Image (cartoon, rainbow over all chains, first blue to last red; front, side):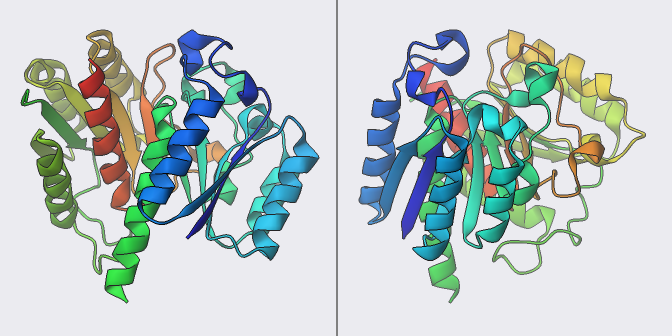
Length: 150
Length: 156
């Protein structure tokens, strides 16, 4: 299985940016954990981060043409603004999960609306940086589960 | 290994899961969910108490009085998200109390509660508290929450 983990603006600052909210773990460390977690079950995880909305849209479009099995997306602040990312996700038919390190619903009102949530299958938030590896592990379990069913 | 106790609380309406679009488990019932949760808890050595009630007063009383006996809470407050008649403060005050005791709390939903649009949807609102949120993974929403609870407890 191929999995794209797509990260939005400011996530490259993890570890130093408001550690009381986002934790002390760096993006590099999270990325390594995701890739290793995937490899354990024989899955290829591509971990990406961009501060540019258009680049994120293009990665989702790539996932469509490359027939990537699953997208995990932490669109960060674009979650609350980007109809372009919503539309791109709508066109992608693989399994897609919206991920957040903190729980946006417990924070400022401007973070309560997500343009991503209605375009994805599932939402996982507020589990800290560990949320990433939990999701990768779960995707591997889900795939095993469906294989058994077939 | 410390035998941590996890409370899995299911709110009003969850006794009947026939409306839910299950994910590969045939006809989804609350008992199927309970069995799956028991399996996952067993793997992590967690003691599980799995409850459901249609009575919100009972639910909040149990959350407030019963939580002493538990180390973590997973809650599916389905009515909270969809029914306008629900008293939101019942959930938020109980959950605030629990998070202040430094016990992991995760809100779970079987379906993606935002699919009907954001206007109708209200996740549990306890500002400045730490509450995890998992929605839309079917029966696996509980799975992921149990995994996360175990990880959080192992760090405490």
